[in-house]
Amino acid sequence: MPTFEIVLFNPEIPPNTGNIMRLCANTGCTLHIIKPISFELNEKSLRRAGMDYLKHIQTKVYNNIDHFMEKNSKKNFFLVTKFGKNSYEELKYKLGDCFIFGSESKGLPKKILDKFRNFPKIYIPMIPGNRSLNLANSVSICIYEAWRQNNFQPLKTKK
Image 1 (cartoon, rainbow, N blue to C red):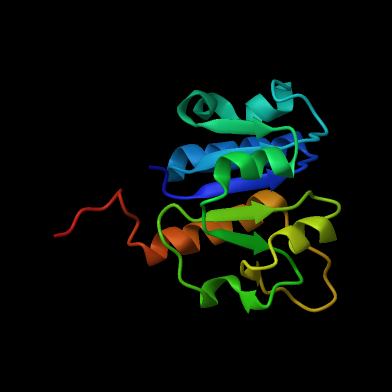
Image 2 (image 1 turned 60 degrees about the vertical axis):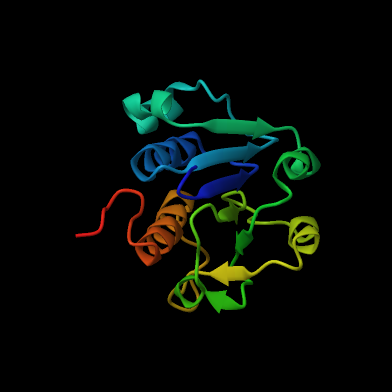
């Protein structure tokens, strides 16, 4: 079982996705990518950011959000958006939880927020007046907080 599941909705920047793939390899996460994708998954800049980690992760690609939901409807979702109601560290996470992130330029569209209206929307605090954080950084912040809350299982064993 993966530690957590990361969903990228319409990613646009290959190095961000490559860095997230590298994060998945180092944290035991599964990566889900929902099309359209603004680049080829075999692009050189993606491979460079992901380095040799790409062969160690599970990446699933879906044609659209409905295709994703057909395969993943039983999961516990958290939508990461600047319109969230709770800061990311305020909620409790369990192994296997799924975090959904929007594209770099548009975030999560209203249709996705509406489709997942019954699931928590979380945000990452920032200085007022700033627009956004880098997508790969945002994913890292959320995944490491969720993993920390779970004592970095299954990595650590009880002493």
